[in-house]
Image (cartoon, rainbow, N blue to C red; front, side, top):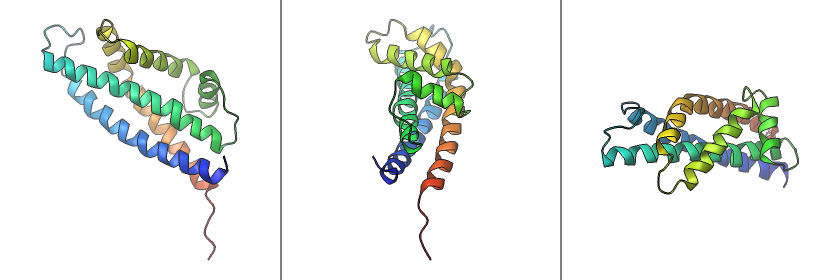
Length: 158
């Protein structure tokens, strides 16, 4: 993929990440009023919790599988494993440690496959605690990626 197409792909992933972050922030605000143990919540409140957890997982997915991978392509790194992607994010200073994103990706997988909601309370607790960090990492990644895209975009001749 040439650098121009890679840059376009990165810009598109940043737009998608921004939208997903806005949805997550909205849901985070809504669940902040709910009890952490989910005792006594109504069916409609469970729906809010599930939407919040799904949005958390979606931001993780877009961040890792789209934005960070697109960033790697723009910076001419070869495609790699999840570990390669998160290790490069750590080297760029986007995260404090690769373990953070690996853990978030594991939770995202639980969210995607916990069809009966068996682990909902534990997942909800984790997501609520980690949302500020996920939003911070996403913002840092978006800022870094925007700088990279602007540096690699050819300037129009005058």
